[in-house]
Structures are given as C-alpha cells and as structure tokens.
Length: 314
Image (cartoon, rainbow, N blue to C red; front, side, top):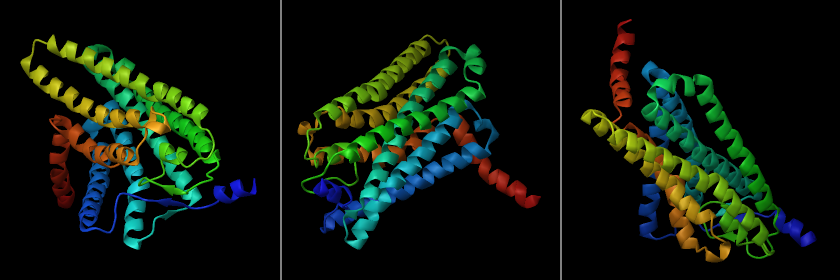
C-alpha cells in the first residue's frame, strides 16, 4: 500500500516525439508552426463569427464552439511538448498528467458531439429548409453546445478517475507525447481488462453511434442534393458535404482505432501517429475546411477591411 501511494504521487516521463537529431529539430519547427497556425486560424474564426451579423446563425454558433475547443485542445498538449524540447526535460507531474487526460477527453468528447449537432443542422437546413427556423431555434443551438461541453466533461471525469486510480508499479515512462488513457494503461501493474471493456462500451456510445448518425445525415443530405433541380445548388452543397465528412473522418477514424482496441494490440509508434491527427493536424484544418467555398465566411472576411476604413472615417 505504501508503494502504491509512492507511485501515485510520482512524476511521469514523456518520451515525446522528438529526439536530439537534426530531423527532430525540423519536425519540432513544423509542429510549432502548425500550433501557431491553429490558434491564429481558430481565433480569427471565432472573432469573425462574433463580429459579423450574417454569421449569427446556429451553424456558425456551433462552429465557434468547435474552434474554441480546438484552441484549448492543441494548447493542452503542444506547449508542454515545446517546453520539454527546449528545456531538455521530459518530466510531467502526476497532477499535470491528470489534467491533460481530463481536458483532452472533455474536448474530444465535446467536439464529437458538436460534429453531430452540426451535421443535424446541415440536415435540417438542406432536407427540411421550411422547418429550419423552428427546429434550429437559438435556444436549441445553445442547448446543443452546452450539452456537448457537459457530457464531454462528465465522460472525461469518469475515465480520468479510473485511469489515475490504477497503481503504476513498474516504469513511469510514458511512450507518448502526452498523457493518454491507452498509454497510461500500459504502465499499470494490475489487470485492466474490465475497465478496457468499459472503454469499449463508451467508444460505442460516444464514437460509433455519433459517427453513424453523422454518416446517415450526410447520406440523406446527398440524396436530397441529387434530387435538386438547380445545378448551382448541387455544386454548392456537394463540396460542402464532402469537406465536412473529411473533418469527421479525420477526427473519428484515428480516435476509434486508438480507443476501441485492448492495450495488447497497441504499439507506441502507431498510437503517436494516430494521435497527431486528432490533436495537432485536424484542429488546424477545421477553419480552412469550413471556410472553403463558404460564401458567408468569405464575404465576412472581405468586410473586415471595409469596416476598419469606416471606423477610421468616423
């Protein structure tokens, strides 16, 4: 029991992505640039949505929450990687590790539920346009966003508590670039099979079911688009659905593959590679993908210089 308490309060060592080689320095520079781009792009998207009245719709309200979650998620992981690389240290405290797990799972869970809400918004807008003002009222979108944060936080609390409850009796070296549940379970010296089954059930509820709902929504949207008489409407709707599905696949695919396997089938290299997608790359792509061929966002961006000139004249 004394040994368990000792390991419980001990720091962990993150092996990370970088070594001391020249290649790692280039990779580090790439990650740093992606991080700056992610924070900047998502911050601009949030400010744009808050500032421009034509973007005050349920879709963009949900998108602003997705951008905020992306900023928090990448900021939860990348700065620690940067500090460790520059300082030559790989230590992370037990509390810091627990916070990383909690915030990461909260934000990822919230993002997955937000993607479901956004797909429902597009489904109603395209398949039932006349009922859109009723089905997607302001209080509905607020409830969707708030529910995503709340359910993500509750789910994360359960998994964080269970993961940190296990005794880490062997090495405290985490072969990953941040504290993630599968990498932590490898360190446990007790049988985690029952908990892993719980993770699998949680994966079905929070990953497979939402992914199926999103896929069904976009299939229905595409069927509706193909029935449209207007060729211009088809050209506008199809690319939008295509790019949105790319975001969904980049989020859900790697995460499903990581969390819905038992620890004996995990390999550190594979887990790191998959985690790069939903922690670093996808958050940087979101603002770009959601603004491609999006007339509202492009028009809002064009209005920024005009509004600045107008304020100067006043």
